[in-house]
Image (cartoon, rainbow, N blue to C red; front, side, top):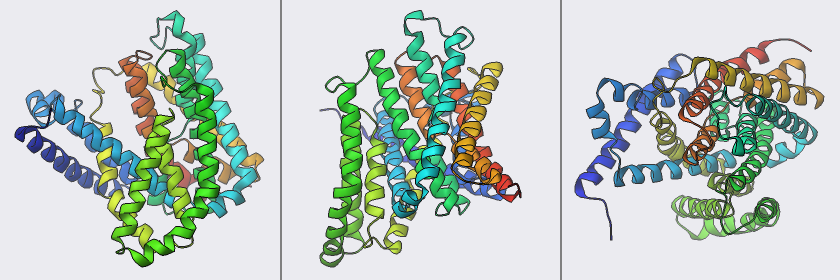
Length: 412
């Protein structure tokens, strides 16, 4: 059977070490400039990736990140990292606050999904040549993908920004997280339809089964599953070594839930997030236990994922200025207008509504995951992918400062 050679093992370990060191250095630098740590980590990846290191010293880049078995192993680490990041984001969600958001979350998520989706769908469908799309037979699928990529948010990025700004557990933070959760669920369902349209969806499960299984999984986990967890945790805390028993079982069920949603065709991160919500809502899940899990994941695995974003593409070679500007305008206009209007109709003040729009505008992981899948399946070209990545980076960098600016205003 195939296995990593001694040199590949050494290479993988060096990659992980370099990524963690660079991620930490640039994360601290980002904090100095009052930017979320995630921005520094993404910039670290850009410097280590083909854009900077690959251009200055191609030999060094290919030595550090060679193609082959070690590259597949690194991708595995990155996939595990994003799953774990969504798990701790779910742990921080207070369902009582989410339910209290009720009307506000429905309005914010609905308008924050529909408005950017329609704008993101219309322009690529009406002007496919501008977006570099020539396959007329898949024009509808391409437009649906672009609409979806404009409509969904990035829970890992949003959660990290809100945590860095100490806004996560506030009324505003819970509104943004609960709305983003609804957005992403619907967005992934739409994307599963797109994959089916181009013949790349799940081979064993139909779209309607995927939708029913996803809704069923969510409802069961947040009702019956939450009840079982609440009854089981006291036994775990009493009978197993603490915190080791709780940590290992929590991550084990996180991976199982992630595997289930991956199997039914949504994405592994959704299962991890829902399991985290169900577990974190238990009265027997102490804040100390959450903090241990949070520190373990957020300072080791999360940086690996965000640094890896910058390793995916050469921004200089595939950069198209006007395409990037148009995608940025569509992204900002759709999310800020849609989510802002929805929040206002939900009863928030204008400055809070605008802040919610800026918060929902943060992208990152989701767009890049969607973009990679679309790129691999020939639905978009490299220039569109680069524009989507740049859009994700800029919206991540501006989301926090714009939220702070908006909340400091005194509009009614």
